[in-house]
Length: 283
Ligand code: AMP
Image (tube, rainbow, N blue to C red; front, top):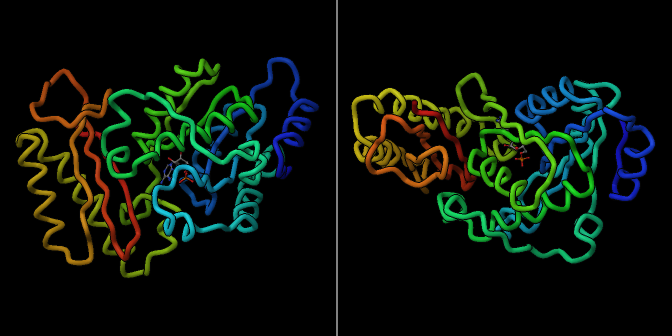
């Protein structure tokens, strides 16, 4: 296990060990690692000569200062978890914002098209410019062959694919399925901030998404949306921020279903002031 806190030392190390035809798999994270992150690292570990895991809470992708302050930071525990699952060949990159951003901690502006104006883009202004900026810096530092992203952040995954096109990065982007707790709650670093009761109650999120999938064959998008709204109206512990059924390709909210297209349902809810997101493929 090698841990680097600067781009320069990381690059020196990768240069010294990488041989011809060897590949680098990259898993960008904000730390507070859980089994969902580990599933991405496992896939990279299997498919590449080396795997780099970045642990970096990116200030430019938070539109809410309090959320940034409260975001869990557990580097020692994260490193121990990676050590327990993988022995050698894992490289941890945990830079300071000053080092990663060359001291200019500001967002670049991207044009990601329609996708950036939907859901997370609508409710978290500036979020995807922050994501695009940090990934530009990280991709330039790591120069990976492949990079692994969770479908948990499905919209982010589409944005990353756009970023790679826009910036001509020679990186294969791999989407990995959502890892869930036994009760269906998607693993998230933010779950650490929930009480045990809230974690149990939050199983309703995935249960509702599964019900939507079942309804999708017979009910229209509006009826499914009304059903979700009514469910969360009845649950006082939750505040529903959005529920959308969207076209998988451009993430535009759907009104009329075209059987030839693929759709997903997306949800964002607050419980105990913690914002949780999830999604499901509908067809
Ligand atoms: P984060 O640390 O939350 O920025 O997440 C880092 C990466 O892990 C992102 O690509 C996420 O989509 C992915 N990820 C987070 N939670 C899960 C999960 N429950 N299952 C699969 N991937 C996940």
